[in-house]
Image 1 (cartoon, rainbow, N blue to C red):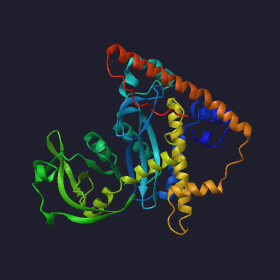
Image 2: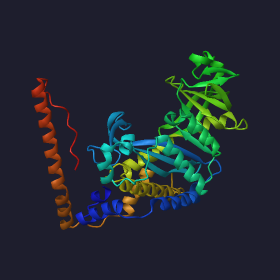
Image 3: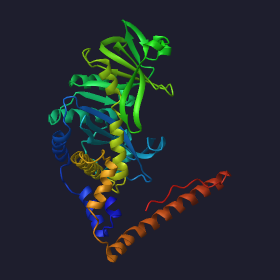
Image 4: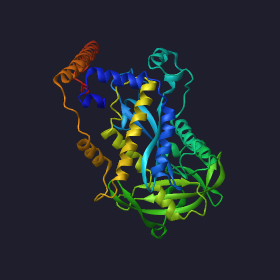
Length: 403
């Protein structure tokens, strides 16, 4: 935990863990107030709600929602927790609004997980929800609060391929612009087609593409060749509603992406293209939160602890965004990482007493010893299994022992 890195005593560490896990403060009410504060700095008539998933690798099996599943951080199947987040973006900046922990179906419905559910204090009324269900619930909550003006809904293809989600987003009055797989079926001129130029539209001539500047991204200015076409979405094999298809091609690599939007015909193509390049800010928010704010460094295992921890991270992120805006008249634009560096000087840590350092060492030493013992036991069991099977005994790569 971050508090441990600040040199706090064992008592302070336990106090923070209790604050996250056992305290009954209402994180939902705090987030609603947070949205009101975000409106003061970032509210805009063209505000965008961006949803994305983020995963948190875990070594053990005791943390709430942990399972071997696809984990985006290493890019493979791994032991991890999965969260879904929503951010607000506009011309004044971007920050996180809400978070939900994804519980795999067996965690909710399998009787074999009953003991783990009890230990992790999962409320009895929690039911299984897909990541897309969680995203929709968060969007609906933000809209119901009326704290922020919202016009657009943005998401990657994990959400964009879900036509039920898109229909629900349209019903609440948002214009969606989502990435979709390149084999998505659509209708063009009342005839079914596929999105890719190679599959359904035929190979588009060079004159069909228009070069656009997508704006500044995390690695600088972004350029793309784009085609915008009127299409109709497909529902149950039939055309349904008018929309726009945005095909985007990287002029250097040739990589193509496809986006669908239900924005009305009055929205010009240039605006659609600009919005299609605005999903990356939520990725940047999460990256800053993980690197600077300890988003993935919690040492809590419960349902409440996870949500409390993420709530505090969200508040800390917006604190940095607000401070960044207050300093906007300084030479150049400060990044959030630079704001953190500035705070490390303006808010110096108190002197560390020897007693506190010794308390901290005493807190971690038995945990490190237990981790080593567990690691050696696993290795010995593996070696015994290999001996019994007569197999190769090359030692597996062991994960680093967490302090």
